[in-house]
Amino acid sequence: MKPLIAILFIVLAISCLVGFILHCVFLSRLRTRHPQTWEALERPALFLNNSIGNGVAVQRFLWQRKYRELGDEQFVRFADFLRLYYAAYTVLFVLMMLVFIANIVMHGNWGRMTK
Image (tube, rainbow, N blue to C red; front, side):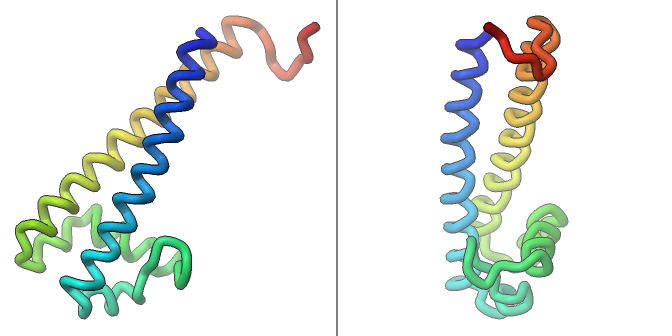
């Protein structure tokens, strides 16, 4: 079980990094190709000028598929892929948590220190 947890953790960490890169590309393309929409979403960025408000606005824009209204087929394909990637990452994260919890339950280590 421990090798599985290590592998899942590495895959999850790499997937997280890839997710950051994809989100950065998404925001960059939104800013350069659709500046009015980017402004309407309060000029979101990956880290700088990021707030809960514009983060929620970007997620709403993505999950409600409002990007399809822009008429940019290449951007739509990328945003669809990003949605799929986020969904797969969420499944991977839940799987990691289930394996981690199963490992704790199977080995009975509920916060006890082992010798």
